[in-house]
Length: 278
Image (cartoon, rainbow, N blue to C red; front, side, top):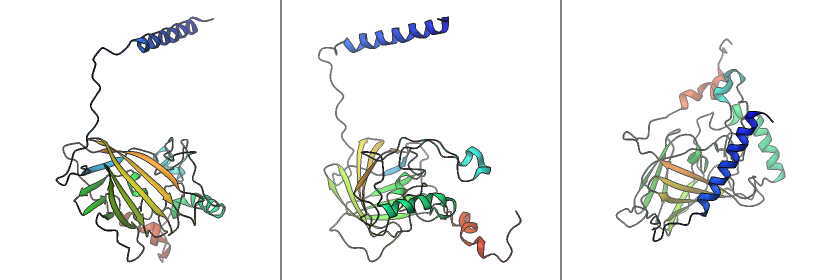
């Protein structure tokens, strides 16, 4: 056996022994536990969710667990590749598609470079807007909670009074909210069927209902959960769970990211009388 293996064996044994030693040490007598987190409050006594938040996750690439992969534009190399991620779907980690919908998802993935609504600068919809790699701002009042998203300038208002009905389907849907203890619960309905759930081609119909839950875990972290129901697309409801992080830098602000001009070639290039030289 070589010297390298002996050293590694010694280190492993020493590490295991140290772990056992420290695990056996009882807590100091009378040592106090850290106090439970108490969410900061607004003037009406509700948890204060105001601020600029962002998800640090690869869910926008794929909600499921996934390995690193080549992106759809080979000439961009690693710049447009897919970063690996552990997935954010609770339970078995899978999306319970109906058979026909599962086939459509495969087609969407194959054509994602031209068909993904994000490529076209369409608003992300709910829940995708929450975990796209861009910040969003929550502005809270007793009767309305507004969420402004950096990407495509999307905005939605959450009605905190008696639930109301949507006048029509829209990109960001219709949001009615209420408090369950310290958790903001939002029911989102009446979204159109044009948004996707990620860059992997996961999609939904206009029958989708999303139930969101926003719960502060500390002054600067919040848990986001979304239960997705869509009997036209999925065989059962399913749930995602993602931590959100508050921007605390001194100059934290929501920047303007109006992207329609970046999508003109994708949307209208085929209508040019003369195609650009390649």
